[in-house]
Amino acid sequence: MATFASSDAFNDARNGAPRISFVSLGCPKALVDSERIVTSLRSEGYELSRRHEGADLVIVNTCGFLDSAKAESLAAIGDALKENGKVIVTGCMGAEPEQIRAVHPGVLAVTGPQQYESVLAAVHQAVPPQHDPFVDLVPPQGIKLTPRHYAYLKISEGCNNRCTFCIIPKLRGDLVSRPAADVLREAEKLVAAGVKELLVISQDTSAYGVDTKYAPSLWKDGQGHEREVRTRFLDLARELGTLGAWVRLHYVYPYPHVDEVIGLMSDGVVLPYLDIPFQHASPSVLKRMKRPAAQEKTLARIQAWRAACPDLTLRSTFIVGFPGETEAEFQELIDFLDEAELDRVGCFKYEPVAGAPANELGAAIAEEVKQERWERFMAVQQRVSARRLKRKVGTRQQVIIDSVGPTVAVGRTKADAPEIDGVVHVASRRPLRVGEIATVKIERADAYDLHGMAVGF
Image 1 (cartoon, rainbow, N blue to C red):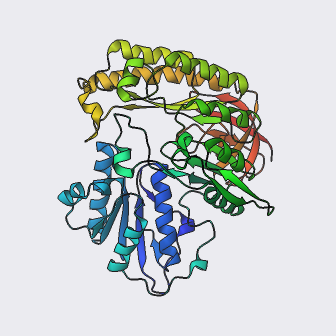
Image 2 (image 1 turned 135 degrees about the vertical axis):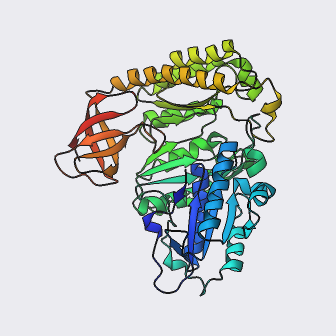
Image 3 (image 1 turned 30 degrees about the vertical axis):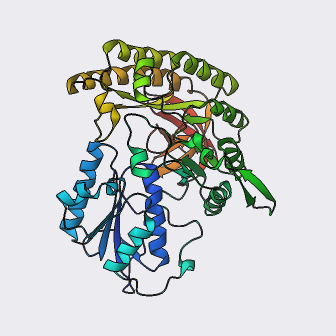
């Protein structure tokens, strides 16, 4: 999905300042990269344009994880060249510049992911800034491309895992964790600017700090108290929970120490929401994927987590049609889905990624078989989702409002992340505001969404 900079980032140029049009593709982690680039550009006096046409330059932040994502990136670059002509490319696909230049030789520059300085250097060469930087023109929290009430908080780059279907370590390198104090200072600024929900992201959130041996860093909190905080998943989550915002944990690899954070959820320190990409349930497929493969232990852990935190929401993603996947292995996945009763689930049909070892691990699954398995998977999960949501009818839920219509607002409970989970359609006796957290009585549920009436503000 292409994300053009939000309205807060725009300040239509009336003073002759150079204007940049920006396209961000891919995952939330790439969106954070885009925010950092945009923040640097604004601090140097560049303005952001809503349209390619008439801008001095276009920057396209690409996704290169799947072939379909690469095709989308190449199409976005082509549109920018057609509508503007001066294009700089960055992001994951930029790690393989020959693929881009083979299709679009006219781009001005190609840089890889996280290469912010290279992007800025290319911009300076193509469209020099008109004045010296004035950093105070940029708000303390930087420029955000999300709505004002939530923000992604990236705590590390890269990944140490070597899942056979993934080339992220090739594109983004091994794990590099940010010092806990740096993350907390950014989070504090976001909350001070009105952010009410922090979405913690990385390639592998629960591995946070492994590369630094959990080194401590010095953080002074909002009350002026100075203390050391270890670069560790549990410690960071605990400190983030003191800032007064919802804290949602994404991309959590199911290491044993993840069990420790469930206590923070049951105590209300962070949201009772865990996003764990299990990817499959068949031990033999998981072994080929180089993922944790003890299905029985996974089910037991899920039961223990829910016993410790009854309000826990579990989200996961799965892949069907992995090379060599048999009907029996797929049935193991379906059986797991029924037994685990995960609240929110995404499912993807396997796409061969150039350079991924998985392509050589078994016979490719026919597209029609992938589609049929995907449909069976989604039918099972739809029934599971409907059962679990039905249990919420009659309850009162805290709902953060994302959009407001003439008669009904749309928001999310603590169980729903933006853009990937369900929503709550909220009727109200008084107008609701975007970013407001309302108490909503749930009146009915469908397969994925809830409907209710605001009863408290």
